[in-house]
Every structure is written in structure tokens, then in C-alpha cells.
Image (tube, rainbow, N blue to C red; front, top):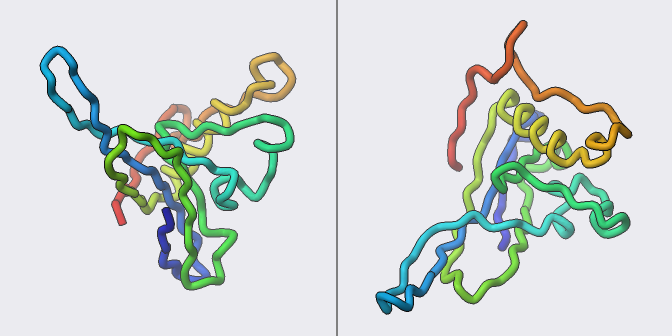
Length: 154
């Protein structure tokens, strides 16, 4: 799937994207098909802004996960361009009948909070004492959490 993002050149913006599939589940006892939404995993290896322009997944068999399958990124790599085409690759599945792309415009605080969650979750060598474990982002003094934040669908 391709989605084009309109960019305001010179202004740093933060985004989140996810793909939601409409799944069909068959209940043999009732001979009925149920539909429900499920958030799909995006293959980040072919989209530079989602894999931070690295080949780590391919070279070291190291994969990054995104909390809640909300893939966050900023526009620093295409800051001077008017638009950017985002390539979202999801694994095709026979029980998914349709896909919906959700693109979010995030505040800097919300982006930093999600980034700290992702970094903590992906710090596998930190579990073995081989690297520092960084605390989650907070914008409180002497406290924890995130205050404020505008989450809007684009």
C-alpha cells in the first residue's frame, strides 16, 4: 500500500501509522462468518522512515517491534520536500477481506513517549546487563507520565 503524506517544509512533524485489516472468522458451530478488525504488522524492511535507514533486521536478524503496532516516525528525512510517499507492506492473509490505513499526526511529547516505549521494548541486550536501560519519557518534574498531546487522524 502507498500513502502520500503532505509535508510542511521546514517544520518538524511527528506521525504514527498503522494498518487495520477487516478479518473474517468462520464459526462452524453456528455456520456463521464474523467480521472483526485487527491491527496488522507492517514489514519495515522496505520503508526507510520506519526502519531508520538501517539494514539491521536483515544483517543481524534483529527486529524492532512497535508498541501496539503503531509505527512512529518524524519528517526529518524529508523535511525539505513537499510530500513523501510511504510504502506499507503487510503480509497477505486469506481471511482479511479489506485493509484500512490510519495515519496520525502526533505531538512531540506523544512521539517521544512512544519512542521511549519502543526503545525499552527493543533493548534486548539491556535484559542481560550489556547496555543501559533507559527510563520512559516523561514531561513531569519528579513524576512519571505524559501531559497534553493531540492525537488526530489525518
